[in-house]
Image (cartoon, rainbow, N blue to C red; front, side):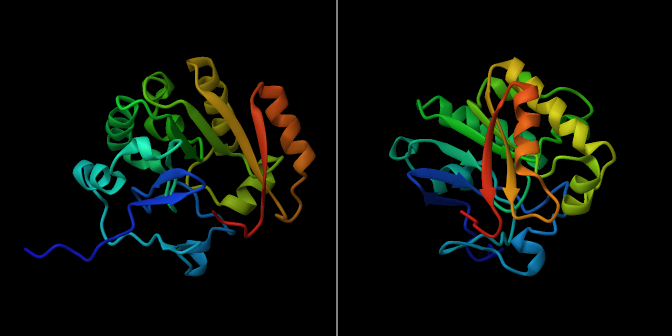
Length: 203
């Protein structure tokens, strides 16, 4: 049986290797390019024609030592494929390269248990998308598919920090009604770092 044409699974930016392992997501963010029929990050088309398996991903990475870190990112939520994420991260870590996870922070809510101890064995840094300073604004901008998401992502950030990972909350400057200073205050309250992103600046 003929395989589908090649998808962009691993792509290089900023000295890092970014991994695109799924297009599935728990959120349907109003600002996500894919919901506006745009799948490009810089010169990379991230539309996945199929979800890659372990061999496809590591073959796409090549030698991890060529990068500063390997980042699970893409236009989907990497923890939607948690077992694959853990397997790949372990493979990368075994080769001495740091691993970062960019996430919506909802994996514990979706899975029904705390996965951060497993993540901490193979992931060094976690960037969690906060994106709003109130639950109402969070729901308006991210349109979560599950209830309780705004508090769940904050609980995940704390659990990830306690498990030993370096945690950063991020928010997008330019989303209507969002107070970036208030978002940063949430990060400070949780005892994690904060990063301001810019609306429509992808990659």
